[in-house]
Amino acid sequence: MVTQEVPEAIRSLKIKTSSVKRTRKEYLMYRTEVEKEQATLEKMKEQGKEFHDLKQQENVLGESNMMIPETRQRLEALLSDLEVYIGANKEEIEGSEELEAANEIIKAVVDMFEE
Image 1 (cartoon, rainbow, N blue to C red):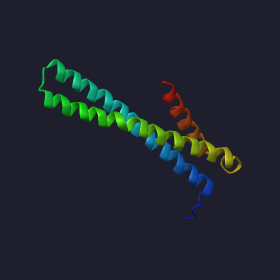
Image 2 (image 1 turned 60 degrees about the vertical axis):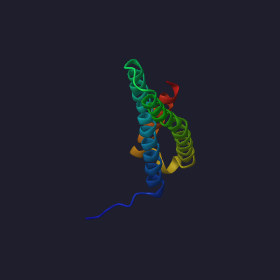
Image 3 (image 1 turned 45 degrees about the horizontal axis):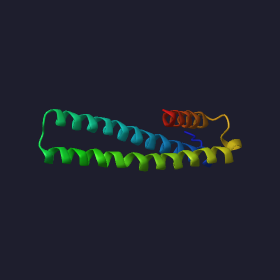
Image 4 (image 1 turned 120 degrees about the vertical axis):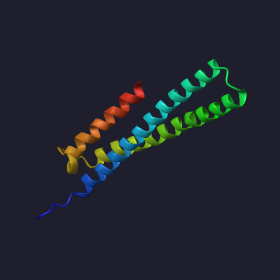
């Protein structure tokens, strides 16, 4: 069986694209978690839970909220790195499936940030 070696530019593009995908998924997970924890806090308030329990839930919500800006910052840096890489290696990656996948994730992240 003959295996073809993947060009370095394509391999690097795959890695960078995967990093953006993974971080986007993490960012979306934190946003969902904040919504869930906020709903839990509101429900606890309606049920008249004790002050300590409410304070604990507020801490959980606060920790989740703190992760969103940090994760967004990492995602923006990874996105920028991917876009720069594509621009610098256009000839080696042009027409590849990996470039198409990278462009799709770039669009998805940009659209998500515009929401």
